Length: 159
Image (cartoon, rainbow, N blue to C red):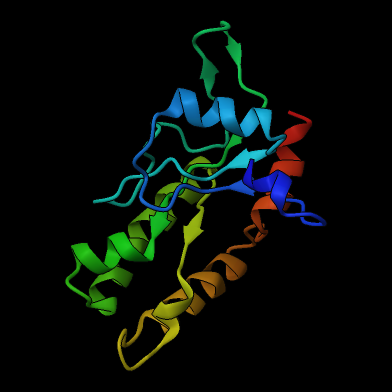
């Protein structure tokens, strides 16, 4: 309903902010709204592959016994989760992320980052904006493909 009210606006993707939802209902609604992808699946309290899979996938529609026509791009690293787990210490979080990057490189998996704009405020969140930049630089040096979720969705559409 909300998409219908937003005349002239087209949304391709969606993310539930607090990761608290009924997945079957969510994906039914997204499919009905012609949303192409979602990036809601992730852990609130830890970094990693919440769905047990390191690649985008189509969640399963249990009622209709078929995959949904919505691609799930799991959230792997969230600034909020890191901030909570490392008590606001960006340096400690950085060392932890080295392991995630190495593991992802070994398995050629994706890493989806969820970083909020307010975290770039170095007064309230010292070092977190720098950490984001370092993550992108590390990915670039590793010849990783860096893209937005729209591009990721287009890439996986053919798979």
